[in-house]
Length: 164
Image (cartoon, rainbow, N blue to C red):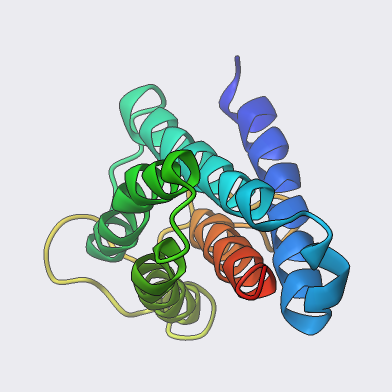
């Protein structure tokens, strides 16, 4: 599959994830109909798709991740396992130990987006520049935007099901 086709598909998934997360944060009652187990399962799915997408970009398309991309991966990758175990065990405490890494990863994504779009001359000192945009779909969806969308969806879903 050509990289532009994969990027378009990934961008559409990211926009759907962002919309889900924003709705869940703004109107948690709307998403509470999912129930605890489905909400945590959907959050695990989002983390899994984000992880797979980052691995495809770096392993198949050979996009070299910058330092901030690595930090976002450090926040996202464990969420796949953490949320999947919480879903399997129906563990309500998963909200406590999954929302922190998701919020931190989201903060790193915001900084990365700032580096790409506002501080365009900034570099990461080691490795590829954090300002490089390997992907720009629809004029604004970059890889850090996709990561932020995933983190927002995870935080939103966990917030929406917290009282289930």
